[in-house]
Amino acid sequence: MPSPILLHLPHASKTIPDDLRHEILLSDRDLQDEINRLTDHATDLIFTKAFPRSDFVAFPISRLVVDPERFPNDSEEPMSAVGMGALYTHGSLRQLIRRTPDFEKREHLLKRFYEPHHHRLTTAVDRNLEKYDKCLILDGHSFPTQALPYELNQAASRPDFCLGTDYFHTPEELVQIVEEELQQFGLSTTRDEPFSGTIVPTKHYRKDQRVQSLMIEINRGLYLREDYSIDSEKTKKLIHVLEHVEQMLKDR
Image 1 (spheres, rainbow, N blue to C red):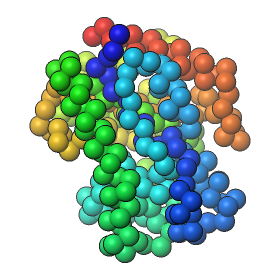
Image 2: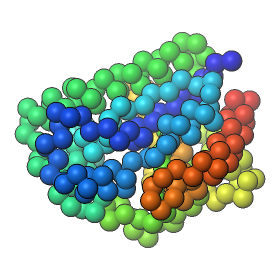
Image 3: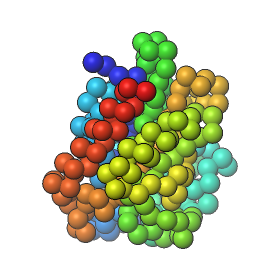
Image 4: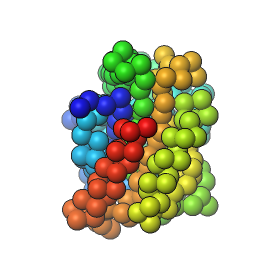
């Protein structure tokens, strides 16, 4: 049976388009290391397996090229302070990875990747609103066990799960359901730490409370080995946990 839950999976891809590889200043080895550090490994697999009745919108390329979860205008994006706005110039170690694109190049990349992705997300939300008169966006991410140098809060706690919220689009009841279900499996949770917020399309942002949103960030230590390979048994257990979350959200 279909579900009003919509999965948003923005950082799972490792793909660097061939025609853009030359713009990244890193060697092949350093680029692979950077992709490993910044990719939300297997989150597309984990969330779609755990929420099989839900539609999903996944970004098709690496966030190193364009990050669809940043505000497109650097003046509105806090992470632009460390060179990680919508178009990264610096990486996870605060190292230079790309020269600042000129206006024409910036607009081209946003039109090629950023705008179509947000159009797909908005369309999917509207489709759920038409079908169910509601839409719950689950913004699926993962984060490393140890803080990376680019993170603005180096002292933030690193729980098993971080739940990102928005005061307008994230009801307290929604957060409590997810927290309680995860904690029943002995998993620790925090709200908005080490990462905060959750995505809502501009069309609906702070305008339509039928659109609810919750970011679910998974600690990579729950399923990823030190060499960034996927531990299949741990991943199966993680999917099992999230299947229980799906059941609770479906029944609310």
